[in-house]
Length: 369
Image: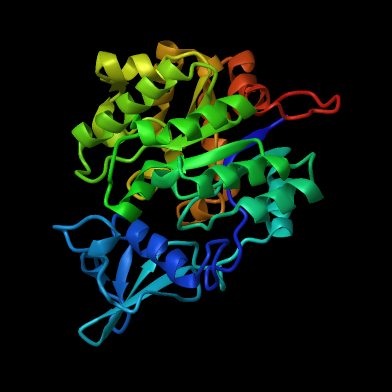
């Protein structure tokens, strides 16, 4: 049984995406694209451009978002205007005529590739997908496990605590929690701040999986990433029953040295915690720099196996976004067809068995990967 631990169903981005207003959704998207590696173009000439105009470099919170008429375009494009000139970011695949990925669309993709089950992540720019992910899980419980989302920095507030309870009642099994969401409030405090304790307590109480995407903001360097990761480690010390899913995996830009990882001991100790799973996600994270079949990733995957064991690794694609670099099939094949240093038992764990155990996914007698 093959399980994709990281994919999305998406309501049309021109709308609220589950947020209270379209404006809030647009700000999440603009903030995300200020740091994207996706190609940006000058619309009139097709020349390469950048997204520096989206955010004041001296203010990396939402208060630094610039008025550039940021908007959702077609063909996977996100558009903005500077000094009367239009630009666009090719964030989704060109073939995505409208930026949406309905439930049945993703189900068709899964069937074609041979993926049996998908964990549906959520989150700011993609939308606060609590309701839509719950809908997908309810319609196809054998195919989808949904995560919820809320305003990360305000997780200890009555409103966010109530949103967790709503997600639990809808049957969702985890929370997508992106540290970069703290930019909404100017990165006001750390993950281990006392104001967030009621949220961590509720996550542990309900047995929810914490799907954590650790950014490096607001400094966007190794020091910034480590500060967030170590703060998460302190949280997990206080709430040891929380099961953690590290979205996007370990950052290549900070810790890879050619064909191996060089990870500070205190950071590696967090990765090695019990009930802590690490995504293998190289096609989406480095597909813009490496060519398929991403041979640069193979020794890194081998090193992950040797450092942490195959029992801590889970495969994810980031569909539909990954198709701006490769097909859904290729996002799986680079691992299955080329990482022959993984034995059948290890591959089985990475492709499904670990994620099934993490999220308590029912198999109904199906075999594993």
